[in-house]
Length: 211
Image (cartoon, rainbow, N blue to C red; front, side):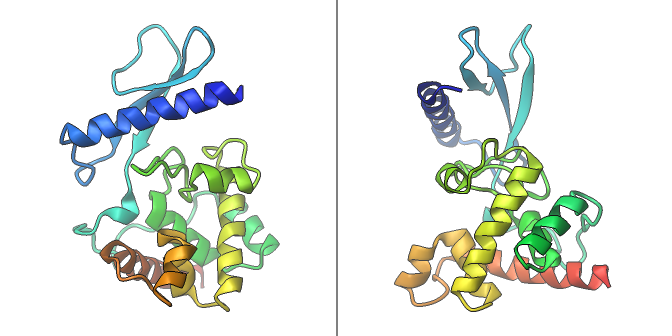
């Protein structure tokens, strides 16, 4: 895709997200259905109205990690032990990571939906922001293999930076390294605190399930 087409596509998606936000659509109830398709000119386009007579893909918009008041009991919720196993294990071996931690991050970020897109624009299983994905050499963030390898590489760098401290790595993954530096540790954001707790619970459960 040409760069100008990609920029145009992202601008249209952003405009659509803003429109949905101000129209009072509740992200917390369920994922929003967005239709992704190619226009006659070949430009990737997005719409909240199902296209007619054209091939399209459904993109679910949601921010699983942002649901502060989720009623899910994360101690008992379903685990996804059989999804993307080979890819996760390969990435874990490549970057010397605990596969259970990778799986916990994916679960918290996207609930294992490879087409997930957050309201901030993060994409795919490990919810990579476009700039981060580009810097990690990702061509298509919705391809599971690319997303998992890039997200794991990013996560491994954060763990190394914070000397193996998973909570700080998770905080940086969620809120950004700048905020971790600014607050000299875990930022005082409720979303980030909930996210870290969720990842910790899921990590322990995935570790136990792997025994």
